[in-house]
Image (cartoon, rainbow, N blue to C red; front, side, top):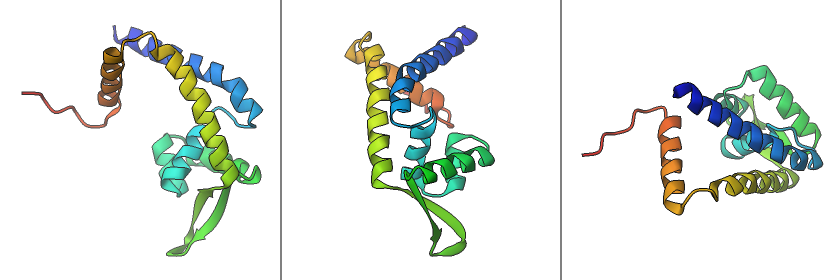
Length: 140
């Protein structure tokens, strides 16, 4: 059963990626760019983005360099610690992040329509529990 669940999760993720890819390519984005832009929007520091995305630091650095060259993020020195760089989304970066989110969300919504509203809520809760680093608290 466990392998079957993993297979379905992998298949769902792959199908969402394949459906969104043409839209992302038209925006000039690689498949992982929306996720990195979202992390930079939340965290600003590359080390935090590396931790959140669970990707090797050199890979994230290369991605950030490419996004910077594309004008989607800007790099600046941290005024509190001049040894650290921080990143911010540009207006164009924000716009492309929002547009890419909409494409990915629409692809997922089409799949979620197969579930009732109650099933969607339960599915979301189960994913939250499974993705959490903590064990769920027992219900009385």
